[in-house]
Length: 332
Image (cartoon, rainbow, N blue to C red; front, side, top):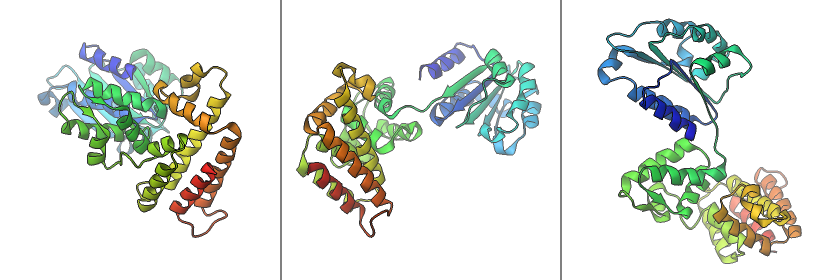
């Protein structure tokens, strides 16, 4: 995210604010920024007396203010980081009096995950005026593939489209999990080497041939043999391939194919469908293979299978059998 980079660049240039409030639903950037400050604002010698990491469940606002008002020892500044600050949500507005009279030699960092401050209240306005408020928003899943490519490119690595799609299909939009897997992969490959589906299969355990991404492609292109081969693999490996995920992906896929049918201008497809341009051809092919009436019937069947998987209208039917039942209906 560009705003996170700007914050780091400002700090590197010496533009350091007395308070940083990192908030929002995506913990990855909150941890990324907080860790950067923890590692880089003070020297190792200065950290011993001037850096403090506290946790929201263990402190009060008064404790934070008391520590923040201290003067640094043999250093230009002290750094106080409050992790899990969302635990102080009920009393966080009490911090406003301190923000109005900030200690200039203290850098106070609050990690306020999965919540946001009320922008109408004084605390938000005071922090925005005198410090930095950064809201970390969840990436939409269709943006995660590009995020993976960009993150790896910044570290001198490439990744194939299929490999990136495998990671998104397996890990969703959890950037923290994805980042850990990328770190694992970059330790294996040489600088400049492309990360391939084979590397992901060998080192992360995601099958390059038998996954929801490949099932979606097979169904869209009406590759019946491959579709049932993937379904059989899922049936043999149910823990790694839960039906609820497969059903959710297929529901989204056919819903987007239906949207593609309704487009007046197909050039609008990437924006309307919320997918990268290079994936549009898959929806175009699926639209040719499945008319709107058929898609409506398929979506109804997907809903039925979803209910059956939850025990409604069916008993003692395995997930593998339910998926095969769905495929039979799709190809009927």
